[in-house]
Image (tube, rainbow, N blue to C red; front, side):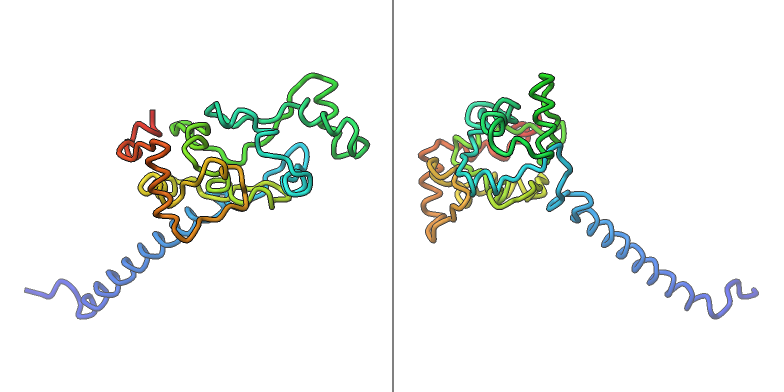
Length: 218
């Protein structure tokens, strides 16, 4: 019986398998890199806002507490976006003549709210409650980074499920005293694990329920 494949077919088959493996590895690697890049995660990306609001100026420069603008963060799932009236409390007098404040003045005159662009935006299938986290000792900077140092606000963490699970799996690594929740400069002490375990018990954190899917997906 005549030979079906030429002698070089074995060589061709071996190299084809090798290139196929390399191709799949390359595709997976590129896809993974894109998935974790700012293109997808939006981490570190400054989004255009109607007014170039500087948290650094207001928090570090003027000493404003997070709750001055985000009034419902301790009592509601939503942290709250400041009403135009909150801005005009100061800016009806301070820097009122600057062109960049025109959108604020237009909102005040028309009664139409400012349309801010969400920076930390979770998918619709994810339920997140700010008040629960704040009242259980999770600091603002844990999720939002050093907002007090941001001239223009950007997303500090991916907010991927795996990132959230780091805390849900071991809350003692991240939990802090409640009086430090709004302290952006807070750093965990050297005995954080020991102190964290005590706070978990003191704040009645239901560790056994934190990994229940229905906690976030309702």
